[in-house]
Figure 1: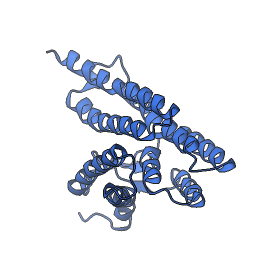
Figure 2: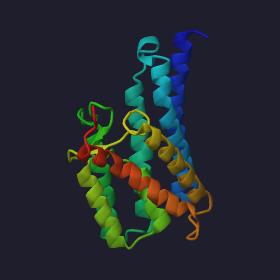
Figure 3: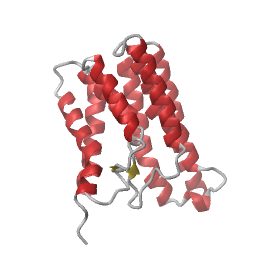
Figure 4: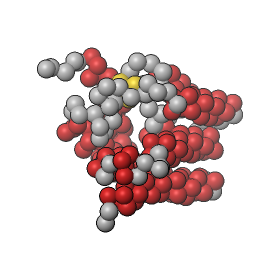
Length: 230
């Protein structure tokens, strides 16, 4: 198998995320939230794998006719932002004007963030909250806090996209990667199981989902507070 064909297969693998996004959207339209999140978890797995594959098979050299970064951003906006925001709106967790406010803020602010050329730091972390609304909203579905709390969190995370706060990339941020990557894998497992059991309130996966989410959200900020020793 030629290097060019291998690189092309990586691009095609990335593009499957759009298919999973469509399947998630169809489930969301029918208010099948558990099925929707299961498809989003599958898309999350694809997103976690395609980057290392792209670097391994050097797609920029062997398949430059396709822009893998652009393709990834398109899929990410669908699976990380658009579909989760729709689910938050249609689920009833935010009634009335609060739902409208949330989806407008989430979709608008995330579109601006995705176009920001400064979104990556020198250590391959994210500068500002990386619009991972799929991670936030699946936790909200699992925990189901009071709607003012949800609205507050939406405002906090939307604002955090444009603050000089660091958020780790589970695969590319080298510092603490020995911890961060297993935590990200655990988050994926907890998220999948929580959706599989239809967000049953007594599921142990909810606590695992909350704890791993807290680590992934705060690890980069802690790294800023505690400079790395040389």
